[in-house]
Length: 171
Image 1: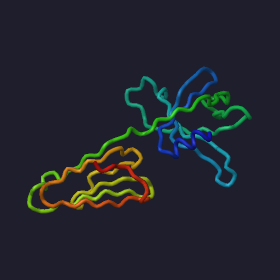
Image 2: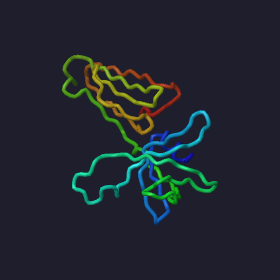
Image 3: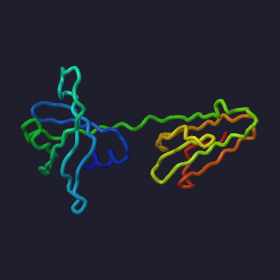
Image 4: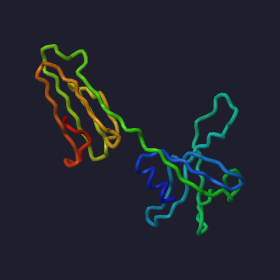
């Protein structure tokens, strides 16, 4: 459960391998815990096998309480059984991305363009061109930034938080 907690808080996609009456994999979307005691209470999951064969299945999350037996975490009443336990946790990070922005049709029109690149305390990177937000992405996935300015004496403003964090490099 600690690994699930850590990976979800990091913004990663999480799946768990469960074993009981066989083996299966399900997607974890959230967890419930008691903040006062730190005890884990349950998981919100989706299962691709739910409504298998239905042409227009409903979107839904299921909640299962969890219990620790000293060795494994068990999903309570998972399809009528308490024997299903978590045997594996897998996660996927967001794919790194490079941002490329330009002034578009406003380039080389005789008016200087303003580019602002900022990050905030929540880990979000935002690119604003001439007052309009053109990209908002998690800062952790930004691996490069290219700004295609014009001949209009454009300005680039950087507002990075924290100041020591570097998610781009000048070349």
